[in-house]
Image 1 (cartoon, one colour):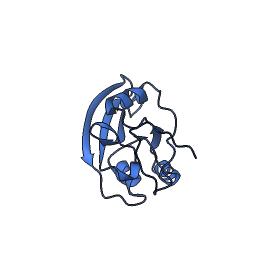
Image 2 (image 1 turned 180 degrees about the vertical axis):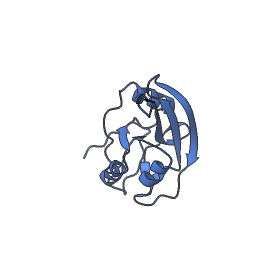
Image 3 (image 1 turned 120 degrees about the vertical axis):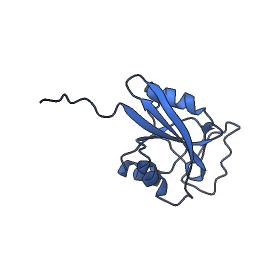
Image 4 (image 1 turned 45 degrees about the horizontal axis):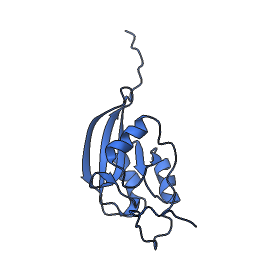
Length: 138
């Protein structure tokens, strides 16, 4: 009996640090994640749910999200060490616009339009006030 090898994963789980249905600006400080299951062939959302984040400890989120079956993270600002840690856990991280709606970010990702990596948030003394549209100039 021969079996045809089809790509195993036609669904992907995406994690987005969220607050009120929008992308939370400071990855390490988020209190919840929205997990979105999407079909990569039909480019549609199958399911989504919001779960409480564990208390933040350095290096915890990548391992914890991998245990949840996450393959992709969409984030605003995130430090380089965290990016490297996600790579070690086989999770791709893409940049999203802070305060954008979760549905919008997922649609952009599925359309192949979120290709950049997030930057910033290496300096924890910085106040994260992104509502007024300021840009980091360092």
